[in-house]
Image (cartoon, rainbow, N blue to C red):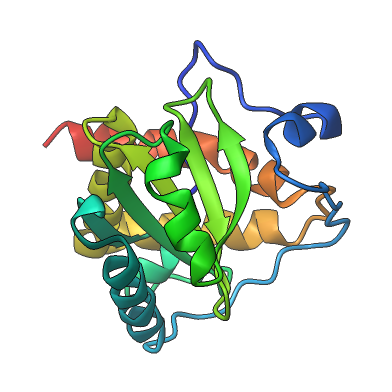
Length: 195
């Protein structure tokens, strides 16, 4: 699931806007999106990464969760494991970035204007490690969306249909594909939040 910006902070869309939050070079995708059927190995890949993250960060890793489409049995997904890492203060990079970099994680996204969100890529598994500060509302939203899709086959299947349709398009940036899913995510979140 893409992190979703609130209405007061629009999602970057231009290459220039995306480059502003990208650490290193922003490389265009210029292709459709590859979605795979659910793979039961995905939770095992998450477990391996979670163990590595916890071993290097210790009690600085307040919470490590498998999120995104690979965390929902039966849901098609890009074969990239999304991981949520909660730390005390994600803006205080000195407390966790060097430790993660020591074991091969690479900081790729820094969004100071959106919950101080950080994203790392993994050393040997294709992951997006999303880092947020304790108490950030996006944490609850990501977990609620995951849990709702795990429990609600109708919304899971509807989300999969939309993803498959959108994935067929050519996207200059993968983020544009994620942005295009915002409407269906918001629709599903309304139902999830109503319970």
